[in-house]
Image (tube, rainbow, N blue to C red; front, side, top):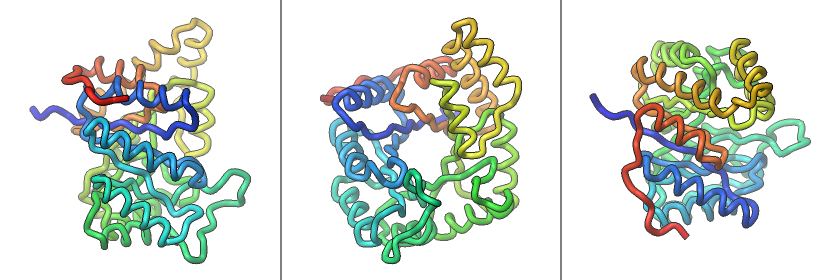
Length: 288
């Protein structure tokens, strides 16, 4: 049986303490030999420069395959493609291409007249360069702005038709949610790989807010369990168990790759991977 593969998402540091936390997370998870790691943009493109620096540094210092996030927010086509070329020049060949979240306190996403109008245009332009593996986002429970799930899946197919090579989903709590989505994608003619995104619960209050923003349903049994765990001081044990059970169900259902949203805190993701039987293979030598 082929060993399933892993990937991990980080976000760029905003200060010295954040830099140490990022490198601690990279150093803790790299021995699990992820097939790639990714680095996000902040909302509204607020961490564009920091993201680029983090992507290049992780790639050059660790040798890990790194995917840099790239969005359509607050940038011209020329500026966006220059970032992509800078990635290519640094040896980075993977990009997570997204429309991106609107800046805080804005009425919603509003593209620049001379910028990419949506993720399809961005994907097409990146694909035309012939330089990148292009990952895109997918919503197993419908994007909040989509009219319905069918329309959302049709738009995802357009991303693949534009040149995307794979997708990473938003987080979810039940394996059946992913399986239904995967089946619907197959029925719509999507054959490219779709990787489930896993969010180990580091902070229950924060996860509830995030779930409300992105349309992720929280099963009542999960909500009750975390309420009781907060009372009993057993949140970490519960978070590990819930994420490990979800991952195990996914693997049993034929999933061969798991993508973890680490929030730059490696311990929970590492513990879940260990519980699933993933063991460290190597240590980094060059992290500074």
